Image (spheres, rainbow, N blue to C red):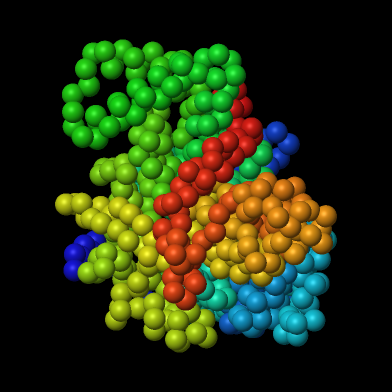
Length: 609
């Protein structure tokens, strides 16, 4: 096996928990602006001391409501200041948050809350409450439901005024580093989602070590950021903890349609994003210039930027001609894109899906160093990250301090260290299967370069990861669609794509009779039936039904009905009639390319802002 390790930069403290990071920040810099919230056309700062005061007041409300240390509390809301406020208030009350994606279907909400044993639920909107109500009868343990849109946070704070400060300090200090901090549910390749038990040490040790490794990023003067990735995801959740530890001023934007305006007014120095955000910035700029008849200029500028960055990385000479072109395009194109992101961004952290060398080199030449990293929920988000002093575009960087990586004989990436989760909640069988001794088996295939920088080359499991970073289990969509009588087989696609789509085949045995009863000729060939509006409407109904079982981000947006069969004889099915996914994706690559040829809407971002 090939193995690389990076020694920890910070000594482990067995008594330090996540709440302790905030308490330390308040002691060190009580008057530093730790957050900023929208205020008219600008932003109002919230100091570290003020934030902790609000955390303590809300924690008292939870205590007054009967929440006990160790109780699991579900939380379903958008990415706002209040999300992090609730997160830390639960830590200070000694409770364990169980985040739920705000796009989750009722069945998903029911499973997560019931499996975790949640006794309370915090919701943001009437729509969230309606989803909960559909399954409330199946959740007898949930005896407290709080709606944020009904001013419940202020009400909780008022109700807890009689609780002593000493009780909150006692509860805040209860959890040791090895205790549960949160349970985050993640999709498996098959079956129901599993709850990842992440400890306080997972967050604290990983954040403290990452802050030292990325000191030029998070400790630069007036470091600030805007969070717009859902904080229910481990990636943004971890970074929120890191920002508090490092004292990075943080704003929030729950609606990405407002992202350009928000970046322009907030002017962050650091961005946290999934590759799709960088793709939108790039694509919208290209679309705008094409519409203005300046597409040739943009394409030349992009090619120059990529070549400039590549030469810098490889240590090659930058010739005079390239220098002149780069300076010209910097004035005509690059400066406008920098302004689009607020004008102060120097670094960005990208994760959840591969960025690709093209975008990495392009933004690097804009003066924005994108530090691509790699990790999973089971690794508290980051396991690796590129460093400003050792940036290798196209890789996801070396192991973080305190983390070890190895690649087994089958090419699978395995991880151990301060970031690796403890177990799957109440699932010892799945836990045992996920580990080889101390090493967590990621299910991803990768390779190292000579410096230990990791490149992910494929996925051992069938889980798809969209360009937006959403994990999607194909079976959850394929099985219900396949149950439709006229559907033969289904393959869901969308790995590293902007949305989920599907390839559909028709059942030649069931189809003729169905066509006859629906006013169509039963003699239609598969190719003819694939183009029939009546058939397409029926397949759409099957897809609509399947989409109701998953969140919007996991739902199928487009599909293609193929005018052919997948059989064992064609090489697309096994003797057990299971699909050969890789063979199908190879043989029908053209059809998949056609689905995504039109791209995704990027009208929310433009060079002009």
